[in-house]
Amino acid sequence: MLGANQRSVRRDVRRRGKLRRYRHRMNLGELWPLFGLEIRTPRLLLRPVQDADLPALVRAALDGIHDPDRMPFGFPWTDASPADLPRNLAMHQWSLRQVSPQSWTIQFAVILDGTVVGAQDLAAHAFTDRKTVDSGSWLTKNAQGQGVGTEMRAALLLFAFDVLGAEWAESSAAAWNTASLRVSYKLGYEPNGVTRVAPRSAQPVDEQRVRLSRKAFNRPTWSITTTGEQAVLAQLGIIGPQNDAGRAPRSR
Ligand SMILES: CC(C)(COP(=O)(O)OP(=O)(O)OC[C@H]1O[C@@H](n2cnc3c(N)ncnc32)[C@H](O)[C@@H]1OP(=O)(O)O)[C@@H](O)C(=O)NCCC(=O)NCCS
Image (cartoon, rainbow, N blue to C red; front, side):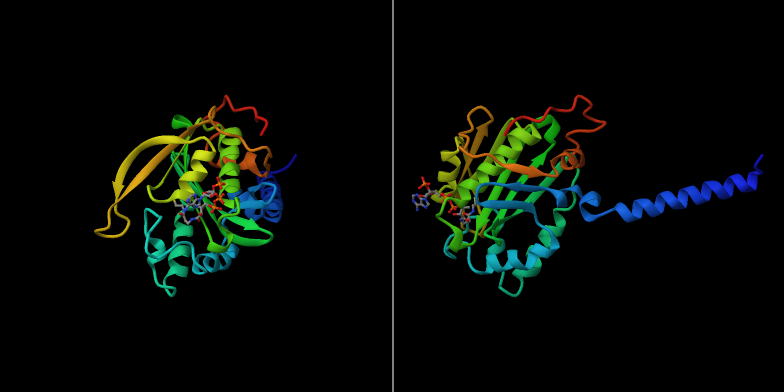
């Protein structure tokens, strides 16, 4: 028969053993499942931006994204000086790590032939209730006009509709932004109203809102392959104790 002291010593030893095993197994992808997510298309790899991607992402941005005369973004982040832009971009990335089932934004680094060429955002509020995602994107100028923008948005839509279970995808672009709107309309989005925005002070422009239902999605002929998505579904609160019904994965 063990005394109370011996039992407590054994409990401590067992607890320390468990902690040691747990510390040994833990890697960044387990700690933050979004860092284990990858989406592959015929030409591209999309993965949530990690700190190691920041220098390449900054380089892609500094190489130029758009004509300086017109601002395509709702927030004019590319107007920052080359000295300020890198840290602003990093701070923005870090702000996106406030992830909860109520509100999340995932910014994917877009990698073509091993080089980061831009970013593709996927965002949602109250996703499990609204089943609606929003998106935004940019590519460094050299990578534009070769179908990459269409391929990365199509990949995101396949992921949103078939993996996350979204029913609607929304987006918007300045009414003059033919490339962005063309990508949307090619994939099946429909106009969803116009609003007035002023990303640059005293320079208002029309913003065209668009939206796409899962049914109307003009699916590409190719499919995506994903890694790490189950843990991400749990991190975003899409599966797990709150959503016991769970969801069977669909074919993509
Ligand atoms: C918007 C963006 C991501 C699109 O990516 P992309 O790789 O250039 O787009 P794609 O090559 O896949 O497709 C662009 C389509 O627009 C068309 N297009 C582009 N500029 C055009 C113009 N001035 N007039 C008519 N069509 C135009 C292209 O012909 C192509 O359509 P098609 O495939 O039917 O020929 C990219 O252009 C970009 O980063 N732009 C600057 C940042 C930006 O505007 N971001 C979006 C903010 S809402």
